[in-house]
Image (cartoon, rainbow, N blue to C red; front, side):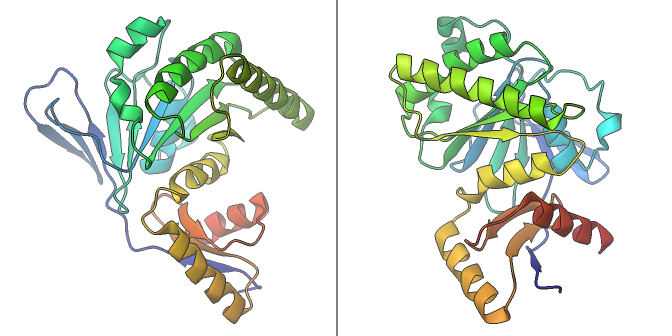
Length: 278
């Protein structure tokens, strides 16, 4: 194995489910291997959940289409904006919710549009997608509104900021944009006395494996008994003499756990390429 271990999880029940806010009855449509469902509005959100939010056209729905529906990046460049909340189910019990784009909501309007209770719980995470080549200032203004509402409910909510659409930018420009966004976010959080201890930044694009790696880091700590899994992989890695071990869901190429040794993006990319070749 060239000193590298790629472990795959059991096959994953993968389908797309629409959380139609105006539907009174459930409705299911099968699209190939993907199931699109519109359940009743009264349905509760899963205990273990990831909330995807951002401005319209920020790219959040494209990310989820590439990861969960195996859509080709060039096929979804002109994807229509999300009009209703969608949900993708993972075999671990984690659900990924794609919320419609937040467009110029004042804080009171936003609170009415999105029930603040969605942020509650210690197994909830928020992903906010910022278009690095779009309206960064407007996107961050909306992010600050989301943060205020979310932290009023759950001060320790993990907030993952995907600095998205970095493809085509030079490495220097990518670093400058990330540094600028980080400084502005952390400065504003300090000014508003918000908790910045659980805020994480990821540079992503649908044209490489960065979106899958970033999403892996989001869901990893939501996996039941993730610490036990990590300990098992540490033991396996040591006894097998491997450099790195991932526990993969082969359908999405999201890793659900890995050993605690340092990792590099090249290792993750190599493992994804190995899965594709299987």
